[in-house]
Length: 160
Image (cartoon, rainbow, N blue to C red):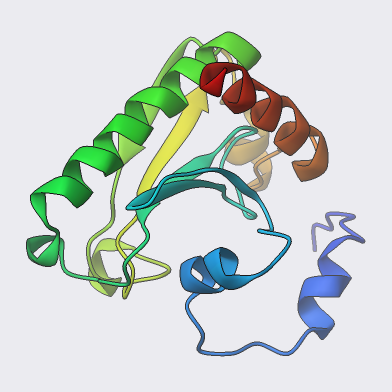
C-alpha cells in the first residue's frame, strides 16, 4: 500500500461535516476563510483541495446551483473576476497556461453542486510528472497559507 504523509488532513477528518454550503459559509464568516477578493455579486476563493498550487474558484454571492438562474449582472461579475483572477495568477505565480471551467451537476463531477462556481487552475510546463502515472498521486508544491498570502497581495495591488 502506498502512503502519503499529510498530517494537516487530520483537522479535516476530525471536524464535524455539515450540509452547509461551503461558499455561503465562507461569505458569512467574519474571518472570510480563504476569500481572496469579493464584490457585491461574486467573489474569488481558494480551493482548499487544489489540483495545483494557486487553484482558485469564482462563485456568485447568491446561492444557486442552476446556471440558468444567474442574472446578467451576476454573469458579468463572475467573468470579470475570472479575468481578474487570471491577471493576478499570471502576475504572482507566472503559470504557462490555465484550465478554466465549471462542473454543472454531480454526474459532471461537481463536488458542490448547489452553488455554481468556476475553477481556475494554473498550469506549468512539466507540472504533470511521473507521480500521477506511477503512484496515482498528485503533488501540490506550496502550502495553502503561502499561496493565499501571495494571491491576496496580488488582488490588493489590483484594487489600488
